[in-house]
Length: 47
Image (cartoon, rainbow, N blue to C red; front, top):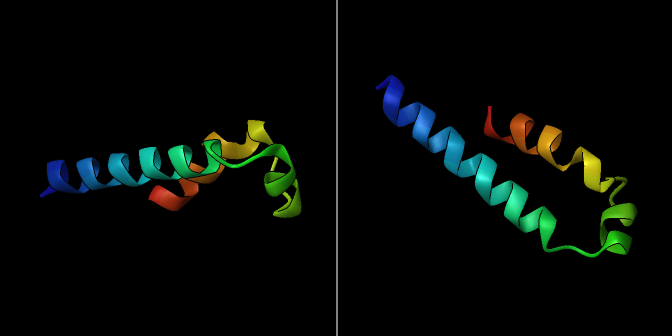
């Protein structure tokens, strides 16, 4: 079960990074997110 959970968390992380990475700097700024914040936000989303 732990392996499945880890895989799902990794998928959520990658999906979040991908989606935020496709946004423009202005869109990210409107959300209050900087490009350097993306990995941190993705980790939080995957937990």
